[in-house]
Structure formats: structure tokens, C-alpha cells
Length: 370
Image 1 (cartoon, helix red, strand yellow):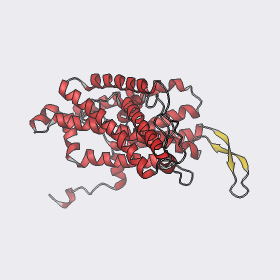
Image 2 (cartoon, rainbow, N blue to C red):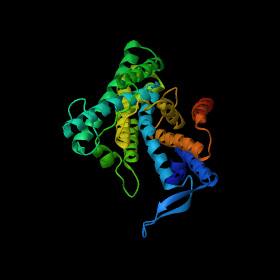
Image 3 (cartoon, one colour):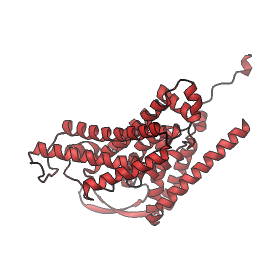
Image 4 (cartoon, rainbow, N blue to C red):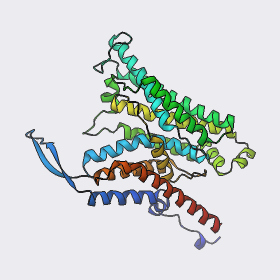
């Protein structure tokens, strides 16, 4: 082939623009710009660094530092679970139980941490436990992470085993486990919250402040996103997942152990729901029975908006994180623009429908070109 016929490699800017997530990034930037322009301003009390006196200043409602931190923090809980949901949707499945797994993992994690706190403080069983002092981080962090992640992984493995063993569509299986696990949470708690968790886990780690920012949930989200990207794009498990989602029959003939891959993927999804629950416990230092209620809608919306195809075979961890960020921007926009929060689920549902329609349209156009 002559040298003139060899195409030069595309520039970095062109490769970024052609990336599947580039359109979503542009939408997020446009939405942030619109909220900055139309969100208005508000008065805020701040303490002067020199005199220490409180004064009122006018700030942009969206660009207010505290608001941006809130959006990033809320997005992290959804994004961590959305990375696991992406893998489930890539194999052609779906998991409606992530919100309930999140709640159950948080409940059992809170109970374990409360017992640890009581033991460390010398409080007898059944006695009142406060969060003052108590268990150090080296004891509280392994217990919190271990219990939450193990409970989440066990629930995910149960979902995967039922899907494979009973050969029932994951929609039906996870719909049932969603209701059952949520029921277990309310039976165990009686509708009561749990507090008295170790301060070392909250103020000492998950809500540790750095220059007025609480970055740990965001850092956990970024680590999970990088790990999810590595698994889906570089490891054998990721290639097998895409193969199953593209054509399950062909994957079986290619020697892929489809059942085992499905169980592993569902287990990882549950594990990430447990990890998100541990971040929630550490950040708020308490558990309340409605934790994770309705999260399945937000997680699925983030995954689908992020580019995952509900028919399987396509999805990315980065897209899931961007989708979660867009979901939180929509919620934040409704607050900033003083729109009734009752419309939030309507907007989320409409976003899922629009994303699915666009996905189907692109698939039809691609098939015609083929």
C-alpha cells in the first residue's frame, strides 16, 4: 500500500469527540451552563477569615460550592451501583433489587457497627449506644466494609443463581427479591432508624473534611469507575459479558460458561450496592429504613442514559458515572428552579424512555447501514 494511502492517526481531540460518551459530556456541560445562567442567585452567610464575623454575600445558586459538593456526593451513591448495573445490562439482564440490596446491606452493616461500638465502649447488650468515641477506624472500617459488601454480594449471588437455576427472566426474579428484601428491612427495624455508629468511620474517614470538602464518596466513585472500566474492557470476564449480551447462543458455542458469568456479574452488582451502602453509613453515621427507596429507578436511568443498551451487548462504566451525574443535575435543577419535587420521578421515567428510544433508533440506523 502506498504511503499516501495510509491514514494518519486521529488526534487526541478527535478521538475524544468520537468517544461514545462525548455527547453525554456535552449535554452535562450545556445543562450546567443553563443552570448557571437561569438558576439565579441567593444570599449566603459566610464567616470572614480575618475578623471571624458573619456577613451576607450573594452567590450563584448553582455554582455555590456547597451545592456542587452536594451534587457530586449524591451522584456517587448512584454511580457506584450504576457501574455494577452496567455489567448486568451488558449481559442482557436487569436488576430491580439494587435499592433493596442497598438497604439490607446498610441495615446489617449498621447493626454490626453498633454492636462493635457498644463492645468497644463497654455497653452491655441492649444498652444505649452513643457515637462518642468508641471503636477506632482500624476496627470499624473492616467491619463496615466487610459486612455491607458480603451482604450485597450474597444477595447478588442469590439473584444470579435464581436466574440461571430457574431459567426465569431476571426482571421477574429481581422484582421478587426487591419486594422480599425490602420487607425484611422493615420487619427487622420496625420502621425505626439506627444511630450510634463509630465516629471514626464517619468524621474520621467517609466524612473527613479537606478544605471544606468531603471527597471520600467521590474518590470511591472514581476508583469503582476505573475498576469497572478495566473489567469491562481489559479482562476476560468483560469480553465474555459483552459476548453473552451480543449473542448468548453464539457465546455458548464459543465455550463461554454463560451461567457462571451471569452469577458472577450479578454478584459484582450486589457487591457494589453493598459498597455504596457502606459509603452511605459512613457519611451519615446512621441508618433509616427508607434508605435506597426508589434507587433502582435512578440506577437504571443512569445506566441507560450512560449508553447501555437494554437489549445487551453495549455499555461502559464511564457512561454510567456520567449518567448518574446527569440524573443528579436534573434533580438539582428542579430544586434550583423551584419545581415541585413530586415531578422528579416523572422526569426520570421520561429520561429512560427517551434514552431507550434513541438507543433503538441508533440500532435501526446501524442495521440499515450494515
